[in-house]
Image (tube, rainbow, N blue to C red):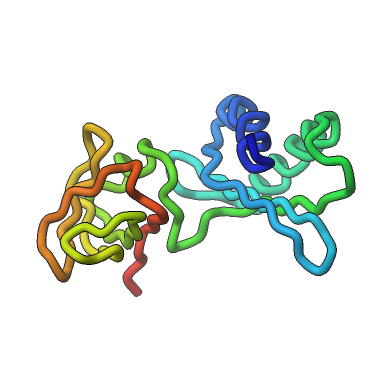
Length: 152
């Protein structure tokens, strides 16, 4: 299990108790510092600064008590932003009807990048009305990266 999986496993149940969705966890080294970025959301999609502060305090206590980090780390907690990452099957179901951008591991119809309206998600498959190829079904396990695309 890698660091990100360890962090997710440790914090997922705590997030649920706080009525928060753990959207994404990133663990990177920048300028010699270990940086843990955690993106959270709520069912209504409204994350306030006070939510981030509260969850940051809670997660910090839990992470400090764990043995995940041998050295110091910097914790950042924020909302997922406009181009929200889609990592979990539940997230795909929540954003049916939204415009999405999906990158796959394997080629589908000679392409790996898809952009269009998310029509459905069931049986671990995203159905997208891709701007290039029309309706395409993408297996969840074939999704390398997916985001909601905000139209401005």
